[in-house]
Image 1: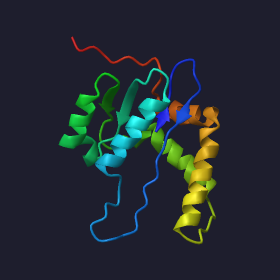
Image 2: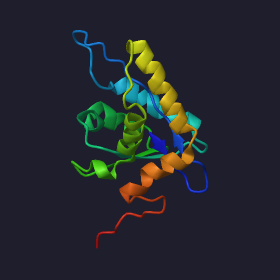
Image 3: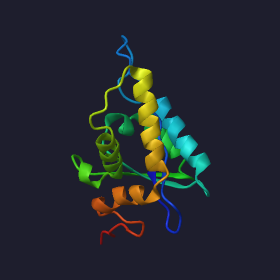
Length: 150
C-alpha cells in the first residue's frame, strides 16, 4: 500500500501472504489479513487517517469488509477504482518495480524468495521518490478533488 500525504515523504506499507497450495488454503489475502494491514497502517501514519483507492477485487466488496470499513469511518475512507483500470492503481506500479528488480532471479525455496522480496520492498520503501513515481502515471494527485454532480 503506497501512502501519500502532502508535505511528507511517501511510505510503503505491505504484508506478504504465503500460499502453500494446501487444501482449503486461500491463495489471496484473507479478510483478517486485510484488516490487520489497514490497522497497522492506521497506527504507523501520523494522524492516522487513510483514504484508500481500491480495485474491485471481490473481497474488497465483501459484506464483512464493508462492515469493517463502516466501523472505522473515523479514520478510513475507501474509493473504488473503475473496473479494469489497473493504470489508475499506484500499487500496480509498485509491483512492476518489484518484478523488474527481480528479473533473472532464481529462488532456491520459498524462504529465499520471501527474503529477497522483503529486501527489495524495503529498498523501494526507503526511496520515496520511487513511490512518488508510482503515483504520477496514474494521473491521481494529492490535491485531486471529486467532481460535484449538479
